[in-house]
Image 1 (cartoon, rainbow, N blue to C red):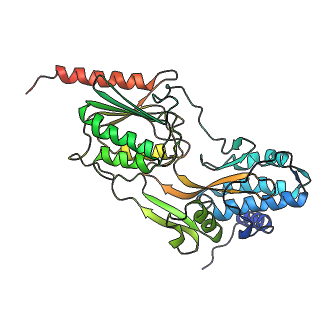
Image 2: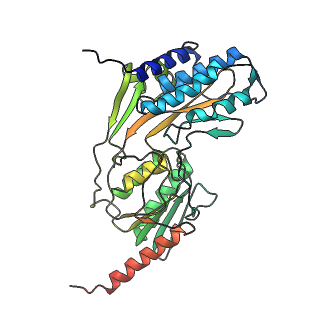
Length: 370
């Protein structure tokens, strides 16, 4: 039985067919261009071709395209069709200015267009508030011990020896002597979660999943980008499909108290805490001793594992997600995780966490033994 196609769906299909007709999978150029040249001249045919390649990246490769609402997709398509139909000779910078609104309605904090040191994406972001700066300052990771409280700050998540060694030394020599732990994720926009995931596993006493399910696309376009971005990720083994394909499923959201660090843990977040830093946060909130202090995190986790491609004539870089993650928390993207203790603008979350720990110590000392 075939369901009738609505007029709006028909218009959407017609726009997709128009936009895709000037490109093929072979036109996708994974990676980054050697350089951006803002004054580079483009013909009207160049403009149409680059619009078609961008449309192919979004419609055929981007994992979020099947997830977003028809209203959002129509807005994106209409923007692209308008540029396509009105194509004329222009510079690469002028073309970038025309493309800026294209992604503005897509609720995805990762997807972006980048050119000439500019980055544009969704406009649906929250206004950030100031809850203090990360204790690591300009360093990638820093640790300290204060009044028996173990403190570690990450300004990004990395996969290198220095990062790993700092976490290992902290877990082995500092945590056992501490009475509480503060983990500072303020300003941490993410990176590679390999070692931070291992740190959460150490703190929780077991592996904790950060999502319910992870989906990928397996169109020829998606597989081309996936293989170039992360050739060993296992995506190449997913059979080709036009539908979203379940790749992984989460199974465990319970810490193991016999092996976990079972002392108070305070995690500091702000509006710039995103991506793999949120992945770490979403594992840690299942720990029974965790309190989150500061402001909502960025909401930058439903779409991830980014792949870069660039438009052949303008050299504009396009970053699209290869994973769609169904999280336990609904409406996470753009909204983020709400802290247990939400700080007013201008309040230092670190000072609040230190005060809360001292309060807890005072209450414990005043509680009579039974």
